[in-house]
Length: 105
Image (cartoon, rainbow, N blue to C red; front, top):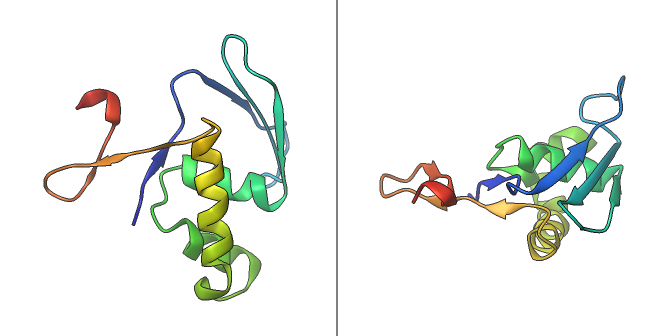
């Protein structure tokens, strides 16, 4: 499984009183990025991945009441998109198999 983390220069806001997981997340790369809004399943996927869950597809499947197999391809594609846009980073695996922050290597 792949672990993810929030990039050091990414600001994010979850509105007060939002459900868990939130249905809206506001994000922006600092200091001069373009603000973006993640809604519904996009917000859920980002929040679960940013929270350190390595089996994001499994967690999302449980959240929406589907099988992991039913959501895995879409979740993986969206995670790749988030990483490509600099809205998440992939944690590098350590030598013993656990995640290590890339900036600590």
